[in-house]
Image 1 (cartoon, rainbow, N blue to C red):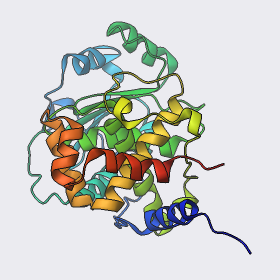
Image 2: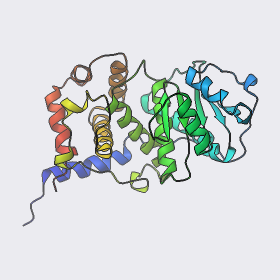
Image 3: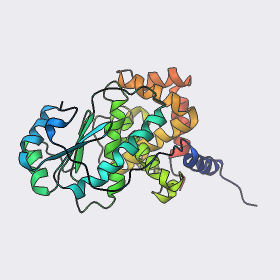
Image 4: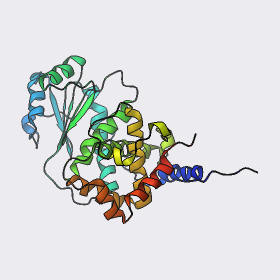
Length: 292
């Protein structure tokens, strides 16, 4: 007689529910040339010092375009096209996911799209950015170099754009795990829309090995990425997924909003979910830790 492991049943339900949860269709723009305009005709030219540093480099090479919520600065239209076509698509998904109705702000997110190792590295040197990452965000701004060596450009672009979109709907910075986990979750869900919500068409959802699992009491206060970045990303996303599925996306947005205002994550969880954090932790461990 075969004995069914209850934890495996929970995980199967968890993963299957993930495919249907928050399945929000969104229209996708048609490919075509980017309608570039001069910088002086852009409706929002308010950028940070980093943005001004970017535009002052190779000044004559920059082209500019805008859509409802984004301003695009690019040199190579081919590298910029996928970002131009997808940014509003991802924006609509996150807006509906958060349940936000009023987003009539005048300020737009600026996306700076670099075209080569040369200009990307020159910009990083200019602002003393020493990371080897191919993209980073600065509040409402995204700086990105779509390297030809990226193995998963669509997923990477979706993840990075999700960072600046999520920031628009919050009141301030959020903890590292919440920032990365939410970008992972939002980008995967948005990409899965084209497959009717089936994330198996986008990627595999992994549970965490026991020896790589980070206790939530430690993870929620981490200020920098650990050595095992992949496990950290996977666990952060699994936590977001668990909270959305177990308590609803409306309450999750309330949680993210409160934390972005500076409230302690653990305290906010217990208040909004009306559940002791130790119980949330135990529920999550049962789902997230691999039993192999």
